[in-house]
Length: 198
Ligand code: AMP
Image (cartoon, rainbow, N blue to C red; front, side, top):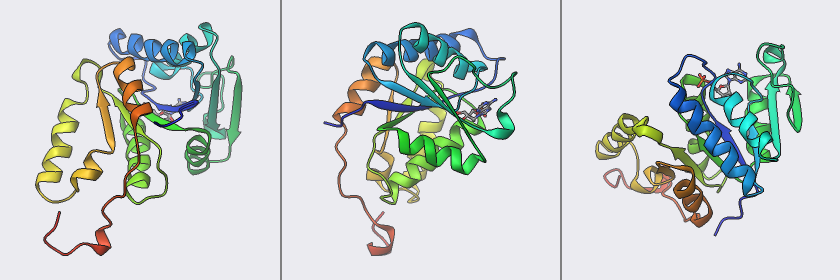
């Protein structure tokens, strides 16, 4: 079982989304807070980011934001967090968020969310960390992405054990169970495989 005391959450910053997605972010925030699990996220006040942080704080949870200084403006940064770390750039931010977390979760989001998710998945694939990576697939938002990942595996671009690194679940409770049940296993290394083996 993985010990998960803090979760890094990646999620959409847009305010233009269907409110059902804001509710999912708030549900996850409350869920983690009531389990005493710290949230690490990008430090924003907008979209799912704000909904996540507000709900967790309201439930008495600890929320740490890590924001690059070019986003550190009143319209974007959350001012009521347990702690807000201001860092010089996006790369420092992502490394710091990863360092502070025992597990990663992506909620529905856009380019920023996907980029962060795929970076931590790639780091897992090449053995740079052994922390669980979850996808909260609320309302089937990521169904087509999961289909595409399966397609990439069938076409030989991914190993099955790399595909399996992404723990996709439809709700906070089942995702939490998958995160804490995660056990890292030895993974394929591209360079040591014969050409036909994926
Ligand atoms: P996106 O999914 O494109 O909306 O990007 C959201 C992700 O990018 C979040 O997980 C953040 O880490 C980062 N991000 C994007 N916009 C902001 C913002 N206004 N404030 C803080 N972080 C942001």
